[in-house]
Image 1 (cartoon, rainbow, N blue to C red):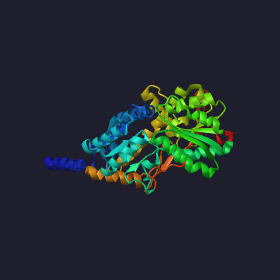
Image 2 (cartoon, rainbow, N blue to C red; image 1 turned 180 degrees about the vertical axis):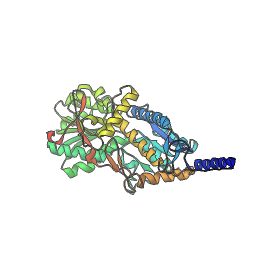
Image 3 (cartoon, rainbow, N blue to C red; image 1 turned 90 degrees about the vertical axis):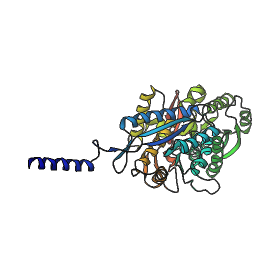
Image 4 (cartoon, rainbow, N blue to C red; image 1 turned 180 degrees about the horizontal axis):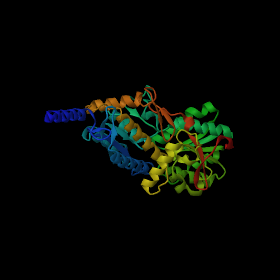
Amino acid sequence: MKRYRFVLVLVAIAAGAALVPAGPWAWASMPYRIGFIASVTGPGASLGVPERDVARMLQERLTVQRGVVGPDRARHDVEILIFDDQSSADVAAGLARRLIHDERVTVLVAGTLSGPSLAMVPIATEGRTPMISMASARSIIEDPATKRMRPWIFKPVPENLHSAQAQADYLQAVGARRVCHLYENTAYGKDTFQSAEAVYGKAGIAIAYGDAFERTATEFPQVARVRASGCQAVVIGSIPPAASLINVAVRERLPAVRIVHGHGACSPDLIKTAGQAAEGTVMPCGKILVADQLPADDPTRALNLRFVSDYQRYTGGAPISTFAGHAYDALQWALAALRTLPDRQPLERQRELVREALETKLGSIRGTHGVFKLSPDDHLGFDYRDFVFVTVKGGKFLVLPKDQWK
């Protein structure tokens, strides 16, 4: 009888074990893969290097945490496959095909620059694979012809339209009604100019002169025409180092003119390469750039301070840039969507469910730049009022409150 009871106890324990996850929280299941593409080399390197470093940092964290846990308590290892598109649209397109078809990733976090991002859009769409870009152009998520959201493409990066609106608020406040706009001859630069054209006129601000320059240029004949135009301010639509070079050229020829950058210049590289010429310039930036200057009740302050601390510990003290924040937000979106997946779904279904989760299940997402609200009609969900306006003073970015706009 005693032996019979002992066997019953063992059976009961075994039955219970089948219902309880192995380990204290969850049981191991199939791994997930995220394809990550950044411009680590080439003209976009000042943006792509911090993005890559964030991907590496989060991979280490995911390894320690043993991946993510789904809604049914299944634990999934997560592998982030990191590649460099060399700031090239062709290279980016090839990498996207490889990650979708050969590496069989569930989701792409891909595209530092607008050009490479746009090159990957049709590949991700045709491959029915969700892609979260780290670039800014509106056309990445919205078809310019139909004005409809591209169903498989998302991005947590404020757009040049947002930046232009913030610039217009500032220019209005300081009484600058006649401006010049100089922009790099890239998809990003052209988008800054088109955005300014769309927004400034409604604010009563005229673009007296607008012209493009090559990202690799070292001489800027456009500045002479700016001087002749009598503009009250010069708006620059470029990223460092090109943004720094033209900043220096404008400051040398027009020492008193007001210089306004876009959010693509919100990088320590602007100050590093423009030096004294960057002093007094202003621009709308993500909150992460001035996290320690945010008010205590800002909803992103705690997240940003924690992320900046982690990032600088991981990189050995590298200065923070908004682009590190873009990579962090994009990967957090991907991980949040992966956590919604039921266990044991085939790859094609995983991709569909991640896309659906991004559109409908994540709700309000606290990020490094603000609180994003994704929906089927808005694959970004950013309010331009979440930008902070900053100025460069003493070699640092400082918040420039509205009551000090003059």
